[in-house]
Length: 590
Image 1 (tube, rainbow, N blue to C red):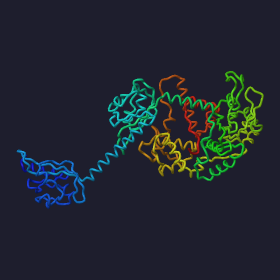
Image 2: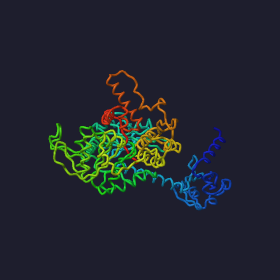
Image 3: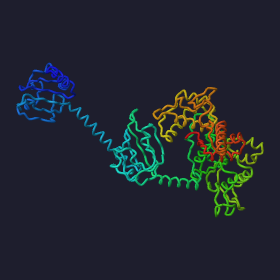
Image 4: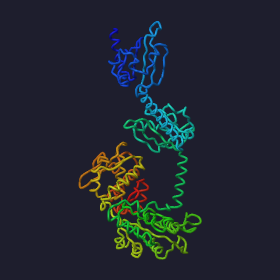
């Protein structure tokens, strides 16, 4: 490279450097003054070059460095109103003679800002590390490449692995059985929940939940929470034990949780509030999924019995042979297989409180006579006993079928009908309260966000118009189902439910939502593919498909679905349980 080219390249480098540079010759005259120096010192290079450095920078010490030949490093200096940090070094020729000096400096405010940012980042990192270390859940964090980044003490206690074993190593290092959930999440960019695995040298049985970590749209890594299955099993067994003992002896909802601006719902709520303070029997009427159970909870919680038990029983879900003993209990030796010493029934468990009899319309006629006795005489007789036992229980009943029709058909006692129908409260179907849809959607989306770990904010105006035009045969239960399925069709970063997220819905002949493989029905209602198998398997699949279709056609109304299938309601419930067909919780809002 020629000398002129070298000089040109040197000038370009000096001019591009972010740090300010001022160089002087052996006489103290400036011959280098780059743009960063212009900016800090407030002077153009053409005015500075050739001048003595003292004339340009009054507080300079470059002339001292020239005379002493000693470098001065990391020195603070005030130039005008600007404080800088500078390095001053002598320039020597081949023989060691000082032939000049150069100062490289930077505005100290930039250095301070950078130092503060580093300090803040370190404090935040220390704070987050302390939080993760303090939690009782075992936590592991992997970077975007799937290498261990951070673990806490709970992780070490659970797996037996230390930071030395994990940090910087592939996320598979702690796995004794099963695939790496960190690697799966990093590959799919989707969270996983409660995956059973075995980890560590001791092959501890755990469940793992892992979520991706995004900064903006960029995937930065994943964070996993690991829980010891033995603790979960213990808690589950404890929960099951408590359920069996107390049969959900408390009401969860209040009237404040009824979300509505509709006058029909407001009228129902006002009526329910008034009767809550009495001991009168209440009959909640309305289609399946309208929220009758929520009203039952709210009536109990607004009554003087609020601190007493609230017991629920679905008359259609318990077999006819067991329903009597469930309601009224039995004495020792009442029947084969009975618990020694007998057992209290649900009426006695609800002593002083309320008993909610859901789907009371399907109660068999012989049992209706026993219920009538309770309502009239305030006493029950255990199965196998002859001595009556007094009870103080407020009965709240619910039905989604017209009891008047059942009375006319001889399937429901007329005297019991009049005993139950003391205070009838009608809960309107969703199609009669479409003005509540925005409020219901908002409440249900918040609930589903917590259940699914999502951050959905709202539905689009287009979707709201579809909702208002739809008939909602399954009422609020169906609305919750549709919103939940729409969330599953959304990408993790999406926050607004659009029409393409909806499951298939037909409104006035128009098809909305995300179609399945074919337009006619969603996948879960499509016939199973034909494969070689036993006749028993074919019958099982056909029966399950028939039940699903019947439930869909009747808006999840079990009574109508059973009638459509030509079987009893109890048989339908037994088949639903056997086929593992899930049911949505009934609620006006939750």
